[in-house]
Length: 400
Image (cartoon, rainbow, N blue to C red; front, side):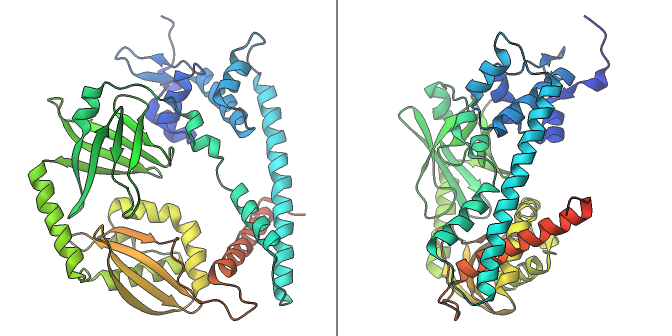
């Protein structure tokens, strides 16, 4: 074997963290034959400069809208792979198109703001255009959808070994069961429908909706018995240990009693208030959250901060009851409207769950032109995005 500097080779974890790709994506690309990382003496995957160049090509072609099957034809065809110079040239064209799209989007937002400043209302078509432009700034569906996922078949006996109960927090339970050839999981969000899980390996599964957002990995103890399931949400991992039926029944009884009592957890109101006020200022109280919840809030802060900032001065908070999953529900009343939040505290008072309920706008319509909170807030967020873009251009010298 040729002598190679070990520092050139990256483990799968290092490759994922340094490129921004997920471990799942790396395995899917390998499954499709797009990359072929070498194996160490211990059997571990190792990625070298050639693999990184191919990953750059794959990422570029995906951003141009090609499916993995199409990318395989392009890169594995008789014409050979594109050279690095060709890839960079295509990459430059892609960035130019995105910059042009951003310019057009900025012009639309600025036009909408000018109309609002003169007390003119926005038409339905204009509002739809604003939403479409905002959607264009989100990650491509192809990068997180099922097209990039290579499903596999798993023996029914293995699926049966995963069926059972898993503990979430103080009294939460996740139930997993098999129906036919598939595994199903109780809705991750209380009140939702059960979700089918699809395997990409014997231990990794993705839901029917949300592949790339939710990931479930079943864990085993040294004896080979299933010991838990790890849920990965937006890159943040939550581990739920497996429990037996008797423990599950006790927890369900505890949850039922809590829901029937309709009493808030001690300290949940004050904790929610501090968190919302911290989000408004861009300094959430991470020390009052579990490590996983802190990571999620940090990821969501660019969206949550403009929303809470728009709502304005904190006025009051009203307890709305305990929902079926055991979370306390509150309406947070602010200067420009009211938002619904759900919060759960651990036994030591840490925030383990805090969710803004996007599906329940509680605001009364604005007094101007009948526009509601959602419409006004959307314009506010667009304005903030345009201002930040201008500041970024000034900072890097790209502004005219």
